[in-house]
Length: 364
Image (cartoon, rainbow, N blue to C red; front, top):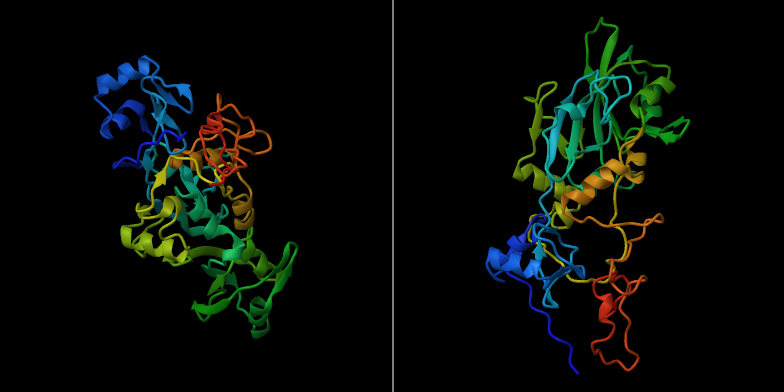
């Protein structure tokens, strides 16, 4: 006995969660009023549960009309990136118990997403700060294994000796390990002045790393400005406290440098998410963390606030248990998820109750 064929993927491609009856109407399954009547009659289900009028569906939802699976295609939204010229006197945090101003106060509001800060600048530092809606992009830019360069203009009291310059390049032992700069250049200054500027490039972003490097050599940093992050340099026209969104060309260049040109929710929309079960769907998505004292911790530690933001960006709301594993969909019929393969090799109707649940162990 052959399995009842599922309907082919529909032509429309959606970029965010949509109301169920509106999506089905756009795909040609009927009028809005007719589909509402089908929902009220209980003939449409979402994840094997009766649908509700006005219910929103996303790429992870399994939709059936009269038991027949409907496949909807979702194209993850393009990542957005903001450049912010942070002035001294602001903290990179969503809130502050001391009531100090935060960089998030000036950011534009988003509907179903939140801005993720790419790294941090301490309270007294200033310069280029990036924000993105893409968790994968934030992770690629922050995690030390990708060695994304950060360039700073540093003003110190006094001048560097040749020995100190060599020490900065070869490495200085700090309390959290060896740190070094990949390049250092004279940034100028008055001949008779007490202060002098230098430009330094680092391949990572630990907590207060630049300041601690110079302090380890007995030098005090009197001003610190980040002027470049990866391939993005701070525009000269971007004044302190101003925000600028990356345009299409610069955004594509940044995504390409991060290795995300056509993948995930950073791509150009050509890659579609079909809401059918796939191998490996049983695991939780990779999520970068909030920057807590340095970019390494930021890329490895997940804050609840940014977890929610990353899930909301492309509608992938999932329920996780206390161990971080996906919980089964109610009514799936198999708490463990996974479709069983018949030993004879025939693929009959099988355990249909599992199709709405976790497909992590499914094999064709």
